[in-house]
Image 1: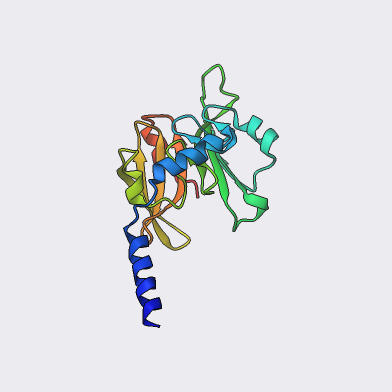
Image 2: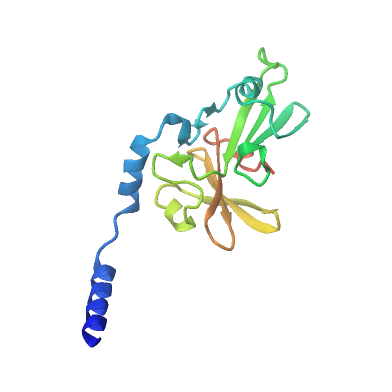
Length: 192
């Protein structure tokens, strides 16, 4: 019996001493296999939804949003996975350029997702720890608010056009949003 205990201890020690695979290398293998429809491109797009595209065209492609709110030339649309409000969400905010030649178009200004299937080229997705984000982004604490009774902090890399909502208890990313680089006003738009 003592032999088995010693063998188990040696195996446990050997396992503990092996260096883990680097997360960035592993994620790059996964990223290379992902279609563009699942990539988060800061300052550009999340999946097939692109900044500055027409929100009305998006509704033709994605169907009627499960939630929407509109006022004074701005609108926010939300689609839930399987139309279940408890599921993952994709939210889009846009507004019209009143007085411009294209004022009839509702331009997409911010996109938010909370599904971990969307990933940046660095392997960042919802569920990623706060500390891991600092390796790839220059984040500043932009704002905080309450979602379903939990305090959420928003950290943004304004120069790249990406923000991360971080659960204050778990310190993990709960949602990712993108906007045009240096568009500081988009960072503060609450999409809930």
